[in-house]
Length: 161
Image (cartoon, helix red, strand yellow):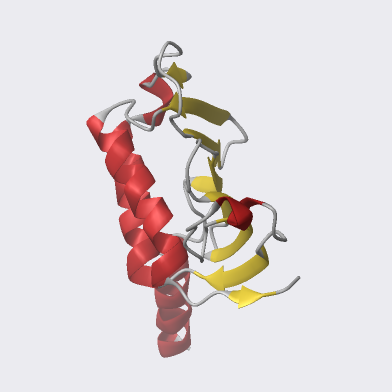
């Protein structure tokens, strides 16, 4: 009986010490258009690392001519983000102190720049939305955008429609 009680206590302590929820309940990133061949897509990442990318243009393909704009959208793809990449993403988000960032960055007097939209839904239900015209709001935001945009090339995406 003494051993059984010890075993149950150990299991209880381990289960309480293991985090079972993420600080972020949803990470959404949208890359907007420019007057050139900028990737245009919307990426949603869940805390279980499942991800969906709605690829419009130049997400997985490279644009070369004006005719590339008239083709069909690339489609919707799913993937499970690699654990190491997800950990890096969360670390980058943690380092931003998101709630203290502005909601808008950019200079509207400049044309032809792509806009990024970052929407973070926290585990407590609150949200942070950042619109960044030119994708240079802060140095760390620029690094985050580059990392997120790199996920479209570094993960194994499966087309679902």
